Length: 492
Image (tube, rainbow, N blue to C red):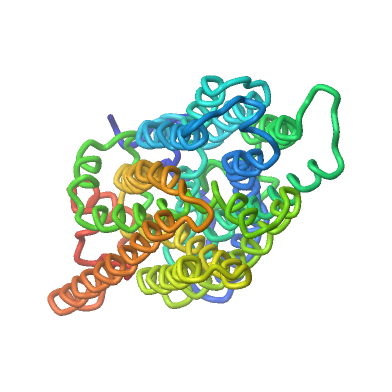
């Protein structure tokens, strides 16, 4: 396959520059002004829209916890471990579709992949209102997991087309931060449904699935037509020719120059890269407590002594606290260009929360502990996705690195759905989650140390790194060098 002539429909980053005849200075105040305008436009269009998509992604994924308090188990005649198994089946579907979705992303535009999968999971989410037994609930949760995997892993790839390495964590935080909003809004919506909505033939849990599922379908349809796919495809009404050229140059300087749809050498390199082993271990340590938290927080709060409706409302403050720490931690991570230390610090905060939940039976201490857990876990999501994106060069290698991260993380998330079976104190659940947050601290600090040492080694041998031209980047990728290039330095 030649490097040129690949259609924009099939390739997200074209090697041909449609703005070759547009002059843009390489440096100076004029270029800085163009970059500032471009980033502002992207920040008010691309990032908020992706955040809106993930808000519905997280809302539809997590509403089963609120539906449980609204009568789901009674309405679908669940018995024994049926509820826990339904939770696990979502992550089973999510896991098996990670890598295939990354390959699909190389063959279709992001807007098509994200839009179509949104429509499909919205249908699954709405259909849960019609389930009458475990079989129906299990099927809808499984297929919803398959389709929801189209948005979360694709978003960091899309953002890496438009932003530089040191700009990613903050934007990714704004995107994934809506999952905390989803937790807060989910509690408010569930409270409003329980208190204010009644229907002759629909129970509150059915209304909840319908209210939160139908908007997702319409949003998916819109996404197919308005989500930007790459700097090359930015519309004239949105950016000036100069801004478009700068966007293309910035994308290529961020190691987005390879044009192949699927590079088998990069695929193999991603599986052999020791960094991806470290990051997968960290993400396993994250997803076990995170999956249990999003699924069981309403139940945990209810067992503190609140009524069903009040418990729905009391799930809001922990997520509100998480929003603050998520934005602050990721902003500082971009400012300092450090990832691992921020992951370790966030995990330490989650550790404190789990210790409070285990060691005390007082409502105040338990509720504070629940807040600390959310404040510690949620910043780690964008930090890890940014870290993997930062340190994997090449479209296929980066996409597979993120897919591996999510595959292993979501696979072990099923553990988190099965460990909260000893109410009211949940010693086993809290203990397992505490152990895995400690794993996150140890592995993230170890990876930071290894990457810092490797950067120092390259500095000593090759001197200060020099920026590569797009042509040099393309040549390095074709030669299979990737992030082992002497001019590449890892984010630590």
